[in-house]
Image 1 (cartoon, rainbow, N blue to C red):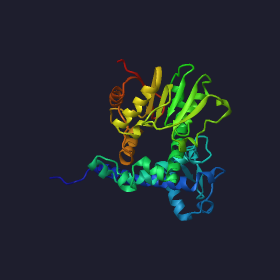
Image 2: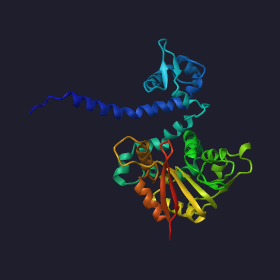
Image 3: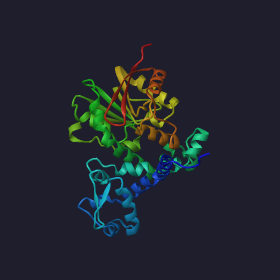
Length: 341
C-alpha cells in the first residue's frame, strides 16, 4: 500500500485547519468594534501606540488584532507601522453613513457566541442551547436584561440600515395603503417605505420598550404614521400591507403560523403579507442565510426557510404564496395573499 501523501491532500488538510481557526477573525472584529478603533482612524493613520492610548488598550495586543483584520481588508498597515482605515473598514465607524458597528457587537455578543460553541449539543438534542446557558429562552432573557436587549435592538437597527432602502424599493406598494410593520423594532424599514411614498400611511407595531426608540418622528412623515403596542402572537393592527422583516426566522413553524394568521385576520380585503427573510436556495453555493440558519439553531427556536417551506407555512396559515421578489440583499420578499376558501 502506498502511504505517500499527495500534495492535494496536504492542501485540503491545511484548508480545513485554516477554516477551523476562522472563529478568531470575528473575535478580533469584535475587539475593533468594542474599543472604537475605526472612530479614531477617520482623520488619518495612527500607530498602535497612539490607538492604544485613545482606546485604553495594550499597544502590542491591539497591534496583533489589527494585523489580522488587515489581512481581510478592513485596515491597512503602512511601512511605518501605522494603521489606516480602508473603504470597507470605514463602515465600522459609529458615525459612518451606513455603520455596522452595533451590528458587529450584536452578532458577536455572548448571547450568540456561547450557544454557537455548543452546536454539537444542538444537533444531538435538536434544540437551542440558549436556555441551558442563560437560564431562560432568548427573548425572555432580554426582558430581564435591559443592557443585552439594547445591544440586540441597536444591532438589529444597524444591520437593517444597509438593507431597508433596497427592500423598500423592490416592492410596488398600492396607492393609499396602510403599511403595518409587525415587530418593526425602531422602524427603519417603515421609515424607508414611507419616505418615498407620500400617499402611504404606516403603523409600527411592537412592544412598548422597543417602540420607545423608534425613528419615525421626522418632519417629512408628519401625520402619516402611528405606533401600536401589542404582541404579534395575540393580534395585529388593521392594515393593507404587513411587513414581517426578520421575524419568522426567530420562531418555529407553529409560532410562525400564529403570527401569519393574526396578520391574515387583521388585513383588509385585497391585503398582502410580506415576509422579508432569507430564502435558502436548494444548491451547494454559499449563501449568508445558510450561516444565519445555524445562529437561529443555536440561540433561538426558528430557522431560515426554503421556498417550499414558506409555501407550506403560508398554506397552513390561510395564505397563498403569490411570488418571491429579490431585493439585491440577502433577504427576499415572500408575498402572501389570502387563500381562496
